[in-house]
Image 1 (cartoon, rainbow, N blue to C red):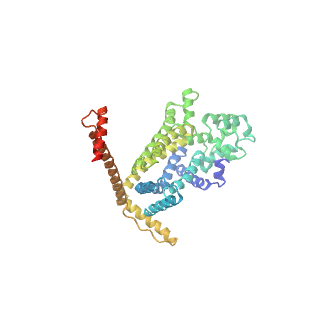
Image 2 (image 1 turned 30 degrees about the vertical axis):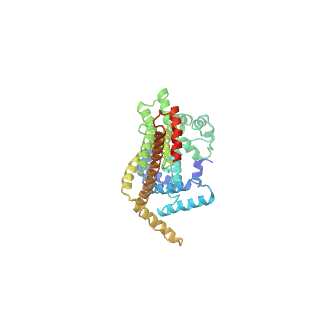
Image 3 (image 1 turned 135 degrees about the vertical axis):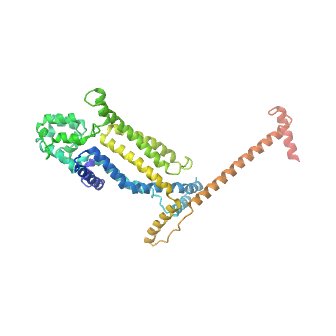
Length: 430
C-alpha cells in the first residue's frame, strides 16, 4: 500500500504526518497574510519550527552521549573481566554488573536510544509531508482542486495524461482518487503544464478568487531562487547541458549546489556533534571506527540522493543542516558548562522517583564519576607500567645471558657454541 494512503487512513505515520501537515498549513496561512504564497519559503520556516520542537530531544540525546563516554571505561572493564567466558553463569554476572553501572549513573541501557526512537517516526512523516505538500496543506491543495474541476470526464485515459503519469512513474495510480491526481499535478514542470493545457484548454482559463491564473499561481508558488522546487537537480542540469529548454546558467548552478551544500553542511554538523563528546580510541570503543565511516558516507549518500529527489527535498536538507550547525554550536557551548556529576545526580533522582512509584528502595547518588574514571585510568596505567617493566626485565636477562655465553669468542662461531656448552656446565655444576 502506498505510504501516502497509509498516512491519510491513520496508518503508523498517520498521526505524525497529520500534525506536521497542520504546521505546514499554518505557515502557508501566516505567509499569505503578507501576500506571500511560496512553498520554498514555507519549507525553510517549517525547518526552523521543527528544529525548535526537536531541540529538547537533541539535548537529551547528546547529554546521554556525554554520560556514556564517562561510563565507557567501567563498562569496558567488565567486558574485559568476562572476555572469553561464554558460560551462562558468567554471562548473567556480566549483565548484572553492567546494569549496576547503568544504575549508578542513573541511566539505562536503552536510555541513549530512546530520543532517537522517538525522532524516527517524526522524521519519516516529515519527509512524507515534504514530498507531497498539497496532500497536507489545504491552502496549496485548493489551487489544484480548481484545475481538477475543469478536467473532463475520462481525462486519465487521455494520451497526454497517461504520458505525464509514465514520466513521473505514476502510471499505475488510481486516478479515480483525486488525491492521486493532485500528487501528479504537483510534480509537473512548466512545459508539462503547457502540454496538459494544450490537451485540455479549459484549465488554462481557470483563475483564483483574486483573478490570478491558477497555473501561473502554482508555478509562482513552486519557484524559489529562479528554480522550480518540484524539479530534480539531475533533470535541471540535463536540460541545461543538452539545451533542450531555456534553463539559465544561474538556475543550473543553484540546482548543482543544493546537493553539494546538503552533503557539506551535513558533514560539518556531524563533525560539530562528535566534537562535543569526549573522544575515545578505536580500541576503547569498537564502534568508533564505524561511526567515523558513517560520518563520511552518509553526507556522500545525501549528495547522491539529492540529485534525484525534487529540489524541495534538497532545500529542506540544506536548511536543516545549516540550522543544525547553528544549533550545534549553541549545544556544544551548553554541554561544556554541564557538570557530569550534576548530570548524574539529576539522572539518579529521576530514576529514584520511578523506583519509588514501583515501591523499590532508592539508589545512592554517585557524585564521584570523575574520581571513578580517574581510578580506573590509574589502575590501567599501573598495569601497563608493570607489563612494560616485565618485558624490559626479560629482554635484559636475555641480553646478559647472551653476553655471558659469547664471552671470549666471536658470537655465532663454533668456538662460541662450544664455549656456551662449557659455561653452561660450569654454571650449573657450582
